[in-house]
Image (cartoon, rainbow, N blue to C red; front, side):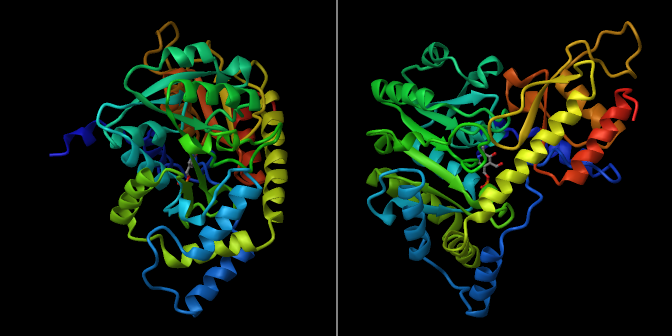
Length: 399
Ligand SMILES: Cc1ncc(COP(=O)(O)O)c(C=O)c1O
C-alpha cells in the first residue's frame, strides 16, 4: 500500500479555500491567480483548433510547432543553449513538470534543498516522489535571498538537487545574477542537479530575470521549468514545459509524462502556439498593471498604521508577504490569556471571518514563514480596494 502518500500534506490553501466558501462576498486575495483573461491570440487559436477538429491524440512530448516556438523563446529570451526542440517536454502546467522531474530524478531518501518559505507543491512533489525536502531559509533582510554558508551547510551525502524559485512565491524575492553565479559554483563543486522554477519569469518589477540555465555550462545540470499560467493568464488551461539536456533523464521524464498524461490536451497546446506566435504586448501590459496593483496595495497597508503589517514591496511575482506585528492577537481572545498555536493562522482566520479577506498563513510555506501572511495582489483593483477598506475597519483606522 502506498502509505507514504499519507505523509504528503495537502497545502493549507485547501483549508483556506473551504473556509472561503463559508464567506459571502469574499475578497479572494488567497488565490495565486491573475484577474486578467488570456489574450485573444490564445482564445482564437483554441477556437480554430476546435473548428479544425484537432481533438485527437498527439505526440507525448508536445506538438512539434509548439516545441519549436518554445525552443526559440528559450534561446532568444532566456539565453538557454537549446540545441534541439527534442530537449523539450510539454506538461500539464508547471506543477506537473515539477512532479515529472522529481519522479525522474529521485531515489527514495534522496534530499532536495527547497527554499523556506517555498511554494508548498515544491516540498509536496519531492515527498510524492519519495524524496526528502530540506528547507533552507530565505532572509527578509536581504530581499528574501539565501545565506550561502547556510545553504552549503544543508548539503549532505544524500543531496541530489537544489530547487530554485526566482521570482519567488510567496516572498516575491528575486535572486541576483551574483546569487546565481554562487549557486552555479556550489552545484558544480558538489555535483548537484538544479531545478529552476521560473513560473514568474515575466513578473519582475525591479532588476532582471536571469535563468541559472543560461550561465556557462549550467544547462547540462539544470532543468528550467516554465508555465503559461502567469505570463498569459492561462491558469485553468494547464500548460507548461521543461527543458532536459541529458538524454537518459529525458527518457525517464518522458515515461512519467506518458503514464500521467499520454499527451497534454490538444486544444490547449494550440492555444500555446497562439500565445507564442501572437503579440507579446500582453506580458508588458500585465506587468505594468501588476506594478500599479502592488503599489496600490502597499499604499493601503501603510495607511493601516500601527505596523500591524510590515514589509517592503516585492521585486517580483505578485504576492505581498507581510510580517504581522508580533504583539497582535485576536481581540476576541480574553485579555491576559496567552495565545496558543500559530499567529499566522490566527491572523488569517481573523481576516477571513471578520473581514471577508482571503489570505494564506506564512507558516503554510515553511517554518520560516511563521509570523507572516500572504496576500495576492494580482486580483482586480476593486477587489484590492475592498480588502483594504475592510482591513481599515478591522484595525480601527478611520475611513
Ligand atoms: C512557484 C510556482 N511554480 C510553479 C507554479 C505552477 O503553476 P501551474 O501549475 O499553474 O503552471 C506556481 C503556481 O502558482 C508557482 O507559484
